[in-house]
Image (tube, rainbow, N blue to C red):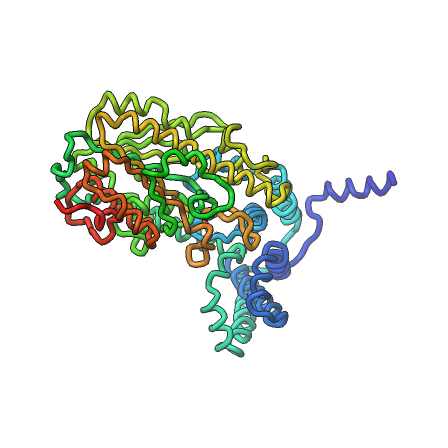
Length: 543
């Protein structure tokens, strides 16, 4: 035994464990990447095609394409740097994809880039560290200990040219021998590319860089003709619009929408003044997209994350028209939406950061500063995977609840319990906020709008969290709750027929309606306003 251990120690002290030609190294590396990190991708191929032969030939085709890329990119001074980088990034992305069964695209990457340290900490644990060690650091160490042999320069180029031609011939032959079926499969299943490592995150990086480069642009002003239309304030009070931007709340888990659990019980007292819109879709599946999109003028179809960063939004327009605009932040940032309005950060430190903080000093400040006002409150809400950090003990209604970020350590029922507790906490927060606004009714015409930025997957079809590419996003990530609280006095003062609003509450709406509804409700006139997209326009009494 002692001599065996000495032999192992001597082996580990060697400068190189083994030697191999560059071409052999490249092929082995390619096969390792496809076989180890792309199990999800090839499982998807098999499920979609229903053919083991098609799946195997897809593996061979990508092996040829990857080998061709390796021959073009992996040279003496770039080989180990690039391969170690790919192994480490692959390990991190592989862990994220397999743990939550999600795909990777540019929106997912933008969401990661714009998140904060606390949200990243929620995703980092001993399991992810173990995966990174086993699938990232350990293979990287082995690569480091391999001596790669190169031929003389001219001969090396010649051999690599042959490898490129041979690999291209194999891939081309496999594709074109049944081009009709291959093209049809690729056209009908474009989203499968989001599961192929490292292609998915390399493409995402390129797209994200393009978006960021476009954002380096002078500010584009919109709605410069905006002005207030004062005669809608019949009682002489100032308008107070409180918009709560929810986080990761899905409509399916709101009892107001028919969910079996009474997750909206704290709102019971305010139901007579509350209008619930059950059929509202988000314009994205991540905060990085949905938040700037819902405040933009163009809507989801024309939204561009790069342009949004240098283009004014509805808050700028309302501020220009005369409103005091005030953003209170309890999340990872406003994604550029609040860059030109008064902003407060209310979440400090790690761990539980209650949304009730958003009410701190709010009523006193509004009472002291008597103006037409828009207040945006950006919640922590139901942001995962650390749902258990998003609610207080008073909202721990559904037990046992998952109390870890590691979903594989909890039963799905426990994960749903923790999530439902966050929805109950949001209901408590909204109820407390409505009570605050009622007390301000002597000075203001208050209203409250609540809408979530996007939804969440809770294990349906094995998928968790959010930020799925929109074209393949499940309805749980797209269908979001939307609530509108309109007291009697405000409805009378602003000539809004609440019965009419209730009548149309079942219509289909989206985040695209928010821009125009805020302008319409705030009596802001501008050429950008489209009354057909204003939810409240059809229920405004004749003036």
